[in-house]
Amino acid sequence: MIASCRQSLADLQLAYLDMYLVHWPFPNFHPPGCTVESRSDEARPYIHENFLRTWRQMEKLVDLGLVRHIGTSNMTVPKLELLLRDARIRPAVNEMELHPHFQQTELFAYIRSQGMEPVGYSPLGSPGRPERDRTPDDTVDLEDPVLVEIANRLGVHPAWVAIRWAVQRGQNAHSVFRQSAELSREFGRGSRRAIERGGHGGDRCRRSQLPPD
Image (cartoon, rainbow, N blue to C red):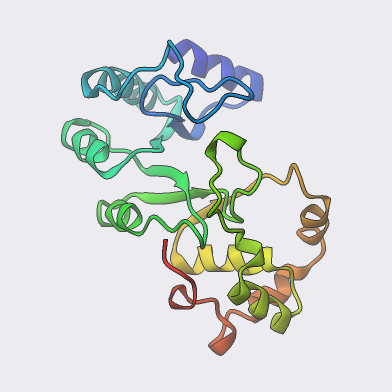
């Protein structure tokens, strides 16, 4: 891990990284086109002793000054409880899927209670996720009547309302626009000023207005 981090720093021409994450808590792999029932021969369940060996290497990165902070991704409350019990350097963040239709309220509250920051990926929802992860009951955040009504009132795209909701909730939200040219254009326009103006009074997108997860 140390060699890999040094190589990343060299490639990026940086002296250190602000944040370094363990992307997944156990070995797993989904080949393209696989079904939800498929299982990789390389997959393993979460074994805390194994993960802790990885975490000790993460801690060394901090000791060496290669990274400032370290964090986790896709961890559950039971896994985090074990890690927080045994870690010498606590994780600063946990990255997880967070958006109005998938709020993960219990995990979100636990992370905040431990002084960690929740980092939400797919803050606009994840309608483009692999077929294996979809169900007939899936919903689309940007078509939610509450988000659409607020967006129409403010004159912005519903994506801005979803981002504003995330910010007001107190989470770091990041997204990559790979599939929608419309969203890419929208986020390059200046709609941000409109949604910021709408962050007062009745135009705010409150959690209570949206369906719970």
